[in-house]
Figure 1: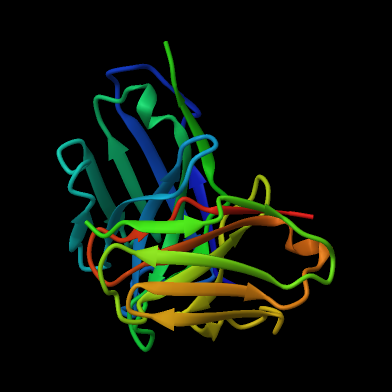
Figure 2: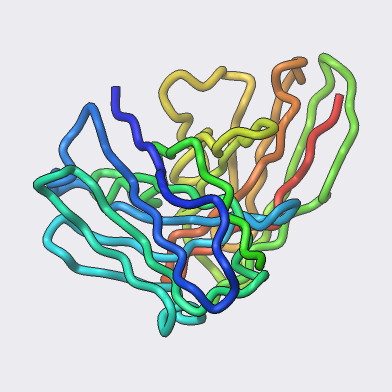
Length: 123
Length: 106
């Protein structure tokens, strides 16, 4: 059974960098049928896609966040990571990592999710 | 960007009721529409993909329909364990986008 687990600090100071890692177990991050992504949910609000990455290193970003966000992948550790720099209170959210199916399904859903990690931006 | 609008934002129903949630896209998205269920404090779980295909393990009381701009999620007979938020998501174009969610209360 595929599992994803987010890890990283739960508290980040304004203007600093938020760094999270997603560890994938029960499957290979090098599987060519999938992308790997980050999605966040501010408290009491809806879901917002942030970025995706393919095992080859190809990346896709939300345009409004692209200048502050970096997604990367480490296939040797079966992990992928997210950095968001110059954070503000508006970046406070539960951050989820997820797998996106890219083949055989036209709507390419996110079919496996991590449990999520709350990141609070506060001094 | 494609905007996804869900209605209602919340609803209250009784066990056994038929419940319908709608999702409207700001432009046509064919059938590139997914539905997720999110229970309190948990991650979203995929319910339906390709607008109408049930994810493996999802009870048959859930169904999806629609194409183009208008989509519907139906729970044919509401159960206590269906208490959750429901989110639609389009994958027709990047950036993918989610609806604002519908809270189902029992």
